[in-house]
Picture (cartoon, rainbow, N blue to C red):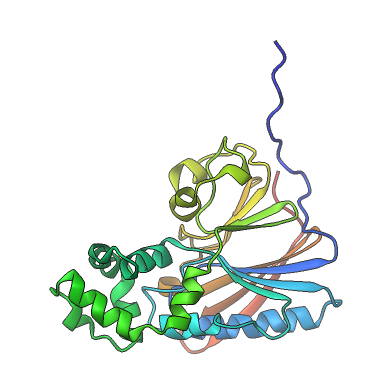
Length: 267
């Protein structure tokens, strides 16, 4: 019996003609790194031919690091020099939003996984929140976090297709078409996605899982270099088949930036 062929690995993945994108890995409250990285991204874009240029955060703007509030504020409006600025929904944004919109009982779990640092950035004392009821935690957080910041998270997208690439927070489920993925998998998946070398019908550019360097496979590129604990925040530029990794890193004395041109994905 004839069996339809499944997707194949994309030999030379490329972005759509006439467009450029910069995808930023998990920021987790490291505004100092984001500020330096945005400067380096703008510099990179200014040195290239004029194209429709788009900026994408892969999610997890908040938690763990010290300045979640400033990171979210940076995404409340369009970024200068970009046709569009988009934020994808990370699992940390999901948990906070659910806690603020009817599931206050989830706030303690959110706090225990980096949320205390986020709360502190909005002026809510972490020591006060510890041991409080869910309703009290809700009242304190909802009063402190501006509506404009909640709106950034609420409007976050699940994924963006960009030519042969798919931007999403955590990854996608192998064996399921990209346009049939669930929100839960795109925000939370790990093992099934990370351990698969199967063709996915696209090259997935994702964050969510911390590694100490960019991970490149034939079916995915991982950009979460653990900014909040490693001091390294990474972005990926895609223009046609060209890819450049732009990094902001804390060397212990100052924030530095670097650019690394990569010729193509490994086989």
